[in-house]
Length: 151
Image (cartoon, rainbow, N blue to C red; front, side):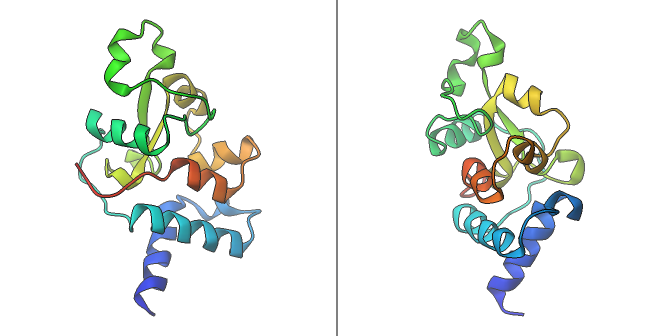
């Protein structure tokens, strides 16, 4: 197996917590989405930490163009969270692969969203949440991919 195929295979194993989440997607769509995720994230490097640092959240906020991964609306600078009295508008980091499923706090596992959107997503994975909102797998990956190393 060549290195790129192995990287895609490993990424798919990390990226999809269960095969059932990918039901309904064509294999070509999954492969294209994984290529995009690996291109943006330069592979996935697991982290032992589970909490994102403010600097990571800010980098994610910048790379996503200050746009929430879930509602696609503008977010405030994470450094200004304490100045915003409405906590629902705070910019927070969310795990793409849940910490409970060994998804650490690596930049490649970071999704940046409004606190209210993250709470609305609840226990759903980003794949499940995006499907429920009618988003394609590729759109969801483009909306959530931000990584380029660890802090």
